[in-house]
Length: 345
Image 1 (tube, rainbow, N blue to C red):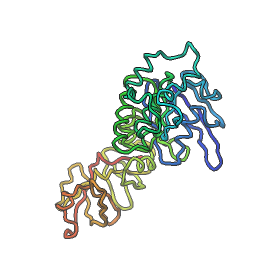
Image 2 (cartoon, rainbow, N blue to C red):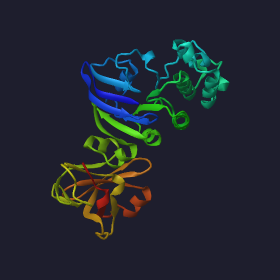
Image 3 (tube, one colour):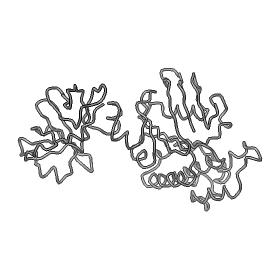
Image 4 (cartoon, rainbow, N blue to C red):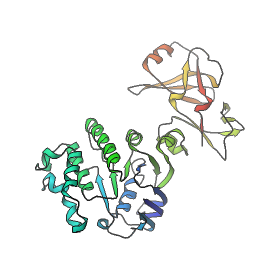
């Protein structure tokens, strides 16, 4: 449905560097990355709002690289709503229809259904000034969808909302996608949004794509140290490999199987690092002695750093688990890491 071929955008002090990307028809695709990674710039290039230095943008088999935005058959929703303050809700929703040909106009039934789906029926005559943030974003969604776009582009549409509105609109987006089955491309830096909404995902950093995979695979099998750290993997170490063993400094970690290809790092999620006062059996586990060197209260859990002679591991513990260990009185503890929980990349 959307194909980016060697897309390059050069701006002062920043560039999008030869991006190749393929998004299937009807897919909910997530472009995830930190602030300043180039997410919105890619989105605006697809929409026709950012200058393309080189490469191609193909939509539904048609080269749209140099077409104006209104000729691309897309809708876009921004985080700041971008609504017209002097127009009512209904006039905002129908604004884009003035640029459509008569034979392309959606039916009144389509607009009524869309307004009903987004729970806006009681607001159609209201001024934009009298809407909540969640209501404004639903109006923005309705306006983008009113023109029957083949693609809906979403630029962090939930980031400006408070948690309650954010959860509601997340559910709305998922339901809309399931019902409309048009292609959604959403940029975000929020993991919860990506996991809940996305089917396929690309991670972007400093204008380069680091990984493209199904959402679950990106989180379970990060391809680079940046992706691993970005998706929350707390233990990332340079390593050398000898058959089914990874050597981190002088510490050996047993892997499930010898890694394929050239690998340079190991990664372990904090929740996969177990801590106990009693040494567990080595059955399928890497077991080491250590001392608690730091404790950080993360609200719902504690992040505990455990120092071995060679490496510092970070683990995730509940309050009750931390009290059971009682690190202030326990001089030596044991950490255990399943071989199956060690990722290599």
